[in-house]
Length: 485
Image (cartoon, rainbow, N blue to C red; front, top):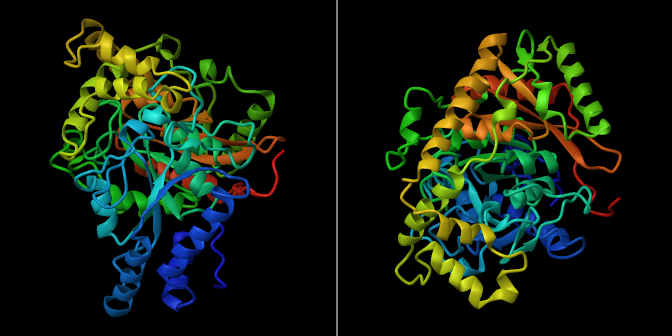
């Protein structure tokens, strides 16, 4: 096959498919060859957890359909990877990286997976993730799971991958698939997107259905696309945005979502946009080298006509401390999910998982399970704890009303701009959207992105800004997969 899949966009692939230069079956084979060469051998990146045994048949069927009926749309015949906490009602497992769930099969596709299949996407496989979305224990490295092992950062193996959608970001960065789906509770798309030099869209909670996703937090969870370009991420987002009557959060999007977000891909999207930079608190962990990359990105935005308000500080930034919300919601949400597994499953509760891990300590407890134990024995699972209710109200007040809302109103902003994923905590607790875009690399080759954040259902504005910034910088480069610094 002469077609070059490295860094190929959805548009590139569709043009090649239409011309007959490639087939979807050939495309799947090409990705599988790269996975064999670099993920399972060679550098052993270890991002891919499982391959869909039906992927080649699905691809061939979509090739036949293309020839007879034409395409369903831009995702027709495009290979997509899914994070391992997203249900597929096929011959693949859904384990969230846990050996306790290594033999678990979902009864049906997650709602978003149904929509991807309807759009013609090929579910190529499942990717590794930080076990239980980094909610198993303290001290577990990002990208590690007892089922899948450790995912490596392809740009520098001494750097973290970011979590918990580590495999989703790394597989895309390494061109093991065209795009992927990750999930986020608090930085789990933005963090690996930043560290894998990919575009990650963390949607408003409710824009994308949560049905059929192994949960962490009822109030903060959302799935979102990860891709090498803003355009590809948006095309994937289009397939995900559908109202799901089985998901209460999804019903909040009625009348507030768009059927086609690609209309907001504007090269001059930065022109006249008012972008605020919350310098206080959010820049304290940046190195001088990272700060220089960020400041350079800001200068490029100014060159494209952006109005930069600097600083545009968030007055509650230092008040947003530990919250018990996720800890309490985890037990409640996980037990409800596990109770609905197929009848043959022996794991029906969080306690079952803890017991399984205790029975297999060498395989499962390399880093312990302190967080699982805390959730099981220090929360009721009924969401009636006084501290939980107070923290939930405080999160909304400090992060949403007195936080992002207040800062944007005070400075009349279209968006806030953060270095890397440092605004993930406040945007996730607010339930607000964010997009991370590659901005540069350190001398050691470690990627750094910038993150645009705004209020609920402001994805159109964020897409404009992210696309314009990307198009006028084009800094992303693929990892060499040959040598590390």
